[in-house]
Length: 70
Picture 1 (cartoon, rainbow, N blue to C red):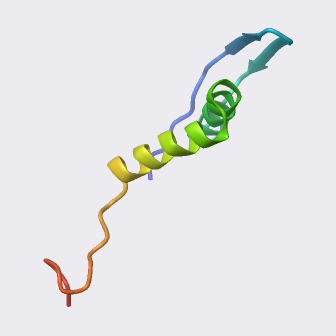
Picture 2: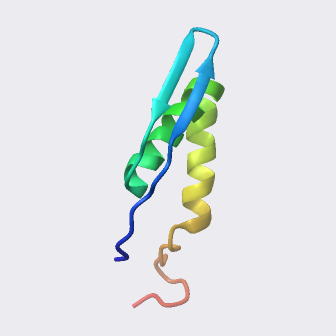
């Protein structure tokens, strides 16, 4: 696992006000990104986008009977 930190100052202006974030870890940055995505696109669209990202980057599961099956 790599060891690094993030130095970011994120400011978002909404019709109802402003939000400010200062993530210091990749996990915090991800939570902020998901929060902004849900607020902007809605829960269903955000879930669809996140599912696409996970599908793209997650290791493919080995299926029974397929290549690499035991």
